[in-house]
Length: 348
Image (cartoon, rainbow, N blue to C red):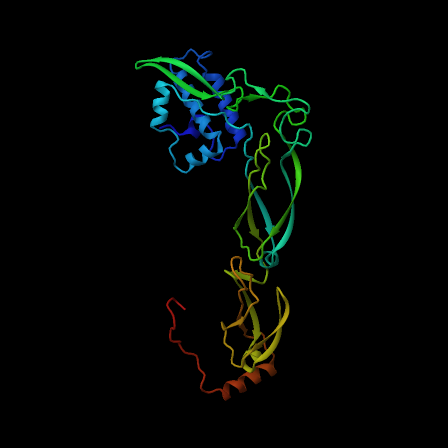
């Protein structure tokens, strides 16, 4: 079975407008009345069927999920005539939109309100999103007589084959608009800039995609709005890292404070706080500050702030400092360089 997107020559993420333009172009080229090529009629049927499936949001979704939109019933209908189906609604769902928003780490941890200005489709006020000029009304399609469908009889080796397709004039709705709204040209929507206020929940992370239902482009002729998918990007922080719901940092500690212990003040995303360094602290030790990590996006509470100690060994000593370290070395006779016993897998 031919791939409908390939038949129309569009990408799988093509918009409804792109699908419509591709179909109209191919339909004009392949219509049997204007194209004498022997295979034009067959190609025209393929193009029409592909458009029928992809122009309807429900059938397109089913097709994209691997559903079969052409079954035994369709085969028999093509050969022996299709039963009358009701016309489609003029209204069509609006397109989805993918937006990107940049956050700093504090905004990702605590949440934020962002204002984005986007170019989108909004409702046409003069016609109340209908696409119909004020004071006028729609009329029954003269081509399909309101059925939304047209039938063609084709002689085949099995006899007369009847094909049923959506009416090109009314796009399957059974109705036409003799007097379209001049502001939106019958679309029921116009392009405009719109300010979008986004409430970013606390605890989002880099690469997360949020789903905002019915916040996308307004639909055609009063159709429901599409959705917005909001992709989060978090700018790396100069001090803090993030591992899940925990934040990480490195605290550089002079060798004297590591040996004797100390209480120092450090900055956190919540503000300054004091931490206690125990006497004899080792390089690589981790201090855990409970509840000072990121908010949990799905759940209650917060992660922790894990601060790793980095013991600083002095690189430049004056003569007095050297004498003090030599005396300390004489006093600490039980500590000598040695290979340590590995406590975990790996090289170190």
